[in-house]
Image (cartoon, rainbow, N blue to C red; front, top):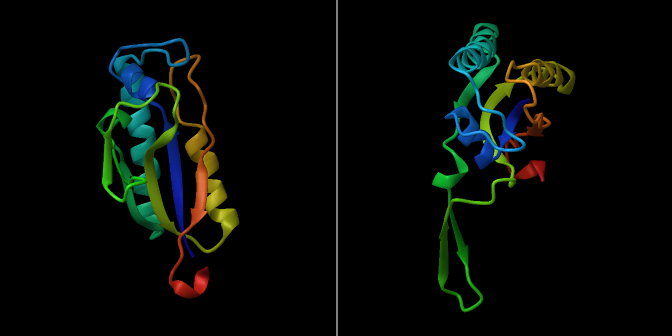
Length: 137
């Protein structure tokens, strides 16, 4: 079964990656960034080697997000970021094809151990099954 494994973050977290800390997001050093990217890359490499990796991507910061909605009058309403510093959005993901929920949970547990600076906000890793067709509703 395919699963989406989501990592969450806020605009403040992205700012901290670029050396702009806040109360809930300490600034990352170059060494901490390198360790984080190596760790996440190793997860992707291991999943590719096992044949479980379908796709994996990091996402641009929330400030670069655009929302498109239908307004009350039926007109399209377009809203560009930035969003509130504390609003959690998907920061990156893996789509994996795993034999069981237990296996994808092992992967998510590994993701939660990613290194980072002391005081880093730790968000849960979200697992969602990917529907294969209309019969999955």
